[in-house]
Image 1 (cartoon, rainbow, N blue to C red):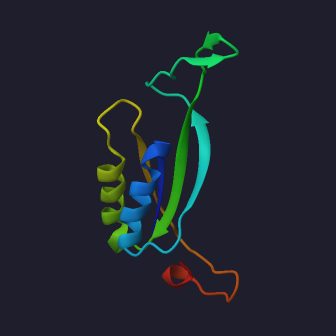
Image 2 (image 1 turned 45 degrees about the horizontal axis):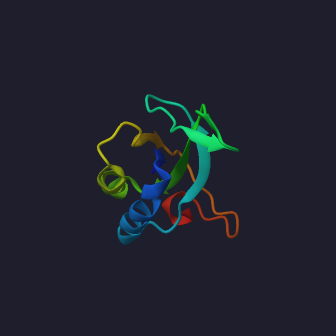
Length: 112
């Protein structure tokens, strides 16, 4: 099993979610995060005063899938998340040694 962790543009979440759902991904978790990278934050206005925030809002996806569909999930994120601009995000892939479903003690891929 693989855990795919992706930091993406929040505006691309729906396209990525639709793509991975078509592959049979039954569960994913996501959270709103803030970070810094090569992309600079846009100039914001607050009470008529311009300022540049030091962070950029992003969405973090966490998806655990069987080994055989991991490349397809990664390809979905790459193709649907790409705008071609700095700040499109990153993907990290980890091996998952074991998974457990708390409700009925299923283990391995059955727990997904």
